[in-house]
Image 1 (cartoon, rainbow, N blue to C red):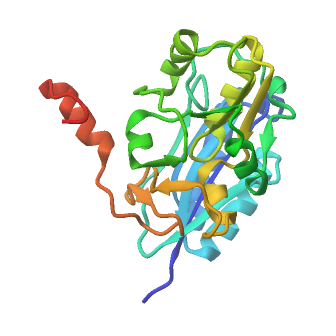
Image 2 (spheres, rainbow, N blue to C red; image 1 turned 90 degrees about the vertical axis):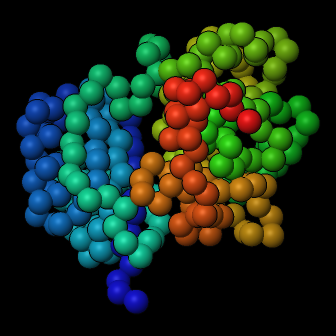
Length: 262
């Protein structure tokens, strides 16, 4: 077997305009891809950056060093491995948001809401905790945490409407949420605080970090985790999963009029 490819997922909320001009930054990030041979996608916006990149371990090591200089940061990332490269193209995009919520959010309100993987089981096992899966319906169907609520949304920007219709700060005193790599919760935890929910928790590093650190005998994760690359899903040991692409199946069902669950 040849060398395994390393896949890293990373993000950070920070004011990139304090570093420089976004168009220039995009060019420097593309140069880092070309120079190292790494492949993947990075989204940059005024509010920060968000990326998923693959390459050999040497390529990734070089790539990280280069983009840390571009982004003026120490990169925090989740890592997994696969026999083939799940990304084949280079794409650096400038967008209004690095994850699209379409709601103004004070990210600083998320301070103190992060729960590390080793403390997550205790939080979500408390009967007084409402456990919210902050991902899309097709992601939930691939796997989720025991007892988690499925909002049934098709995109992240639909989640505020679900909360407005189904959750109440007076009734739901403690909310714990999770997503794939943590970025959606980085926006949604402070959003919930902003609209009146007092005790809010988010899984630090998301499902991917939990699977990286949780002991198999103690995990409360059930099923596989949907990832946005050619692997489709990863199993609890972060290897390529066995499930089909439910995102495509559900999109096709919607077009044909078929109802989910049939």
